[in-house]
Image 1: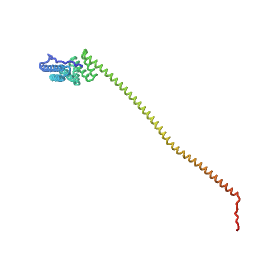
Image 2: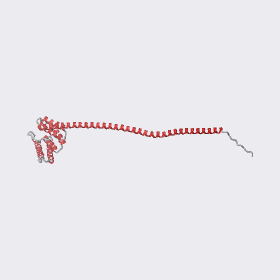
Image 3: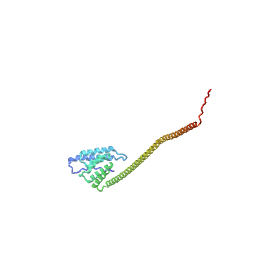
Image 4: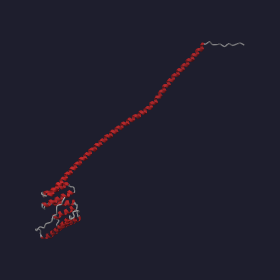
Length: 265
């Protein structure tokens, strides 16, 4: 944004003669500072910070002659702003704009340049307020109107971007929450599936452990059954043998006994 031009101190005829020498010296330093300030723009390809610094020194000398010189203070603020010291310049412009003992045109110029400094510092709301103050003192300043409109448009764009960012952040957060819920549900399902699998594996393991026991019990039952059968066969055999013995005894009883005869030799 363009900084409004320099002011040249005007010597009033009503000033008393003892003060005239100081005023002339002040005016000399202001003119000297203005020449140094303007010469810094001689080369459009670069900014001559050395000449801006020299102009600043001249304006400070003018203020030493007259600390209340509005023109020297305003031009000093311009020199500081041209060197990139926006915060210092802004304080100077703010103080000048608040002065009520100067005409409104000067106050409007101070507020205009204050708006430029704040705009450079990305303080859009502060710049808008400064431009509005400038137009209150000089409503017909087209440059200030343009700067105000530009700052307001920039503010609107920034607000829209912030709103879009907030909406995007909310959407991202919602998607993240949804993904977390899905992950939790998936984890729960996996846990349930794992528990079911572990339960089934335990059941299979128990069944496998029971099968050998049943297999071991079965031969025992078979052995017990075989032992009873053998016992029955043995008993039957014993009974049969006993019958045979009894029959033989009976047969022997039934046959006549032979007596042995002895010869008497």
